[in-house]
Image (cartoon, rainbow, N blue to C red; front, side):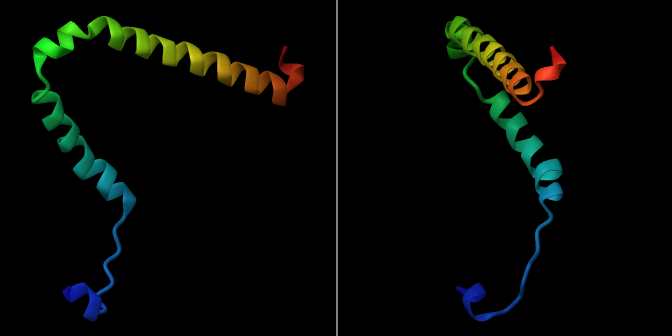
Length: 72
């Protein structure tokens, strides 16, 4: 409510947010994940991770081949 009346422009540098606030939040979430659920779903997690890697490599490869045909 105060910000609506006061013109105190605060600029936030995105690098400060990414480097100082995001890692502690991710670390905290990593500590609080239920271990039983993680171990129960490990096969699905590995399949999705490897599938994303393969999809990304093939997709980027096809994109580069399409954009620069001389790279063959």
